[in-house]
Image (cartoon, rainbow, N blue to C red; front, side, top):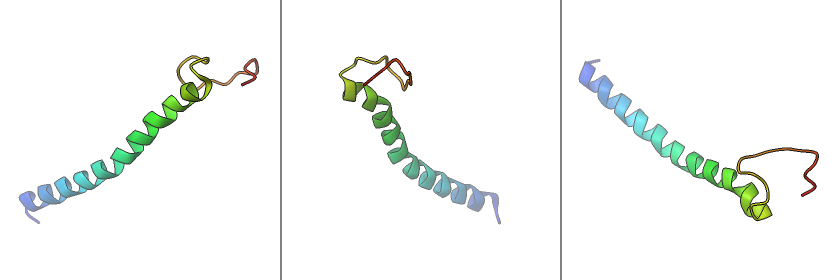
Amino acid sequence: MRLSERAERLRKKLAEIDAELGPLEAAEVVFEQWPEARDGGLRPSGITTSSAWSG
């Protein structure tokens, strides 16, 4: 296989991977924002667990 053919195959594979990552990145953003949206910003940002929080 010529180097140019291999490079083209790798570019196509990278494009496929990028297309798969888009929805995952969007889901990550939503997942990170969900606790704050759920409790009206009462908890600090990020996911935390504490027995003191009664929700």
